[in-house]
Length: 573
Image (tube, rainbow, N blue to C red):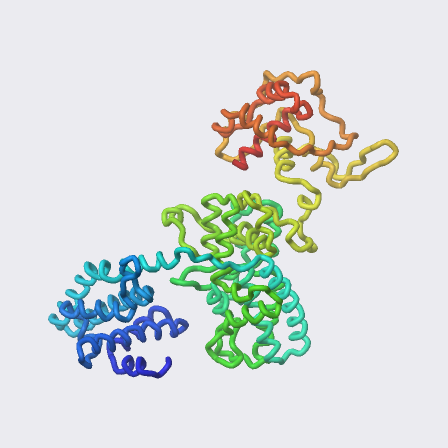
């Protein structure tokens, strides 16, 4: 703490010292700067009250009902209480007025506790009286004015956010720096300068990717990183089974470590493979680069046994090195506002908005938190998709889409050995999979010769393609529990039209290329099957055939393609 006049007024006051000790017990030694700030606020208040009363008393002498008005006057003087041009009462520093109100309540409670321990009824009555009058008279005199001032100060002020091109430029620069510094540190081993540069670059990259508060990343503990779980092994099977193929790959690609945030909240931090390699390198060479063994932080300061590298200094320096046009706009708080702002172009559902809010450690409507569970699988697969799109500066491409519709296939690194890219690389999408579900399993050899004139094609996955194009009309369809299962019974009244053969198609022809559904076709299905959408069931064969014959532009669709499309629209609804 800076030793000045405020420090002298603080150190000799037992109540302010006790106030600081209580906060340290509550918040821990990691928040010492915050605690010292609040103690200095009380010391300034005590000095101002003594000036008004021309006395030299300690703070506890003024925690009484008779001195309440003097305390209010001192707070108003410190926070710059005045009337503006419109004759409205405002504060020059409204946050100071609000903080002093919280501090005074805490001090009064501490003094009352002391009175109870000493069995001093007089002191206890003074504290009770002060707290009672504070609860009734403080708001109209101080806090209401301060809150109104905070709101009006935001009027006509543009929200300066980072430029997307700058963020992409910084991201590319950080990736290069991390790759080079990791290789150099592995070669040299004992180099404190290289270690600090790599730590700063890795920390900045994690903040940039996750859009987290800088303190949450910079204070990541070695124990938290080393003891992180393998979320792929412990994930909820029910949730994982409903993920898209791309999201399942994200579960393998992204790692997650949990750290402590504000108000002891759980803060998930997503890590890519590149980040993991860099962090493992930092952990490996800590001792050789002179990092104190007593320093608990992953991004430890080489010159301190208890502090971490300053995140803002590292981020600002690296932004300038990357050649960003407006490096001063790149900070963790603005990154969070940037993500929250650009997410408005997406059509996020309530639960998707909650996922993003929880990732940012924001508060959303309290009632939503009572009946929705945020699983680690959702954090990595769903929120990870959003983070990757934002990290690449490509969120604008997904304007108007739901979080579940964001496809980051083209943003992800090439598939690695052992990863299942079958459904991604083959161009099969969710509608194709639904077609296969409607068909049910059809016994076809794994390797199938298909004749096409003078050429022969050997297709290892012919069974899957066949299922996507052809159907078994008498097979019941499995859908989710919300849809009426009775609607999938065999339709005995169905009679194939002249355009449709009742025989199963031959396996000796190649499946036709899938035709994309147009907006007009989808609108017709919504109109004709309005009752089915309300009841959440799939139309029967006869109903689908009736709609097919009614509209000429559906002539190229068979009834099973129509039913499959309706089922897909029901799931998407």
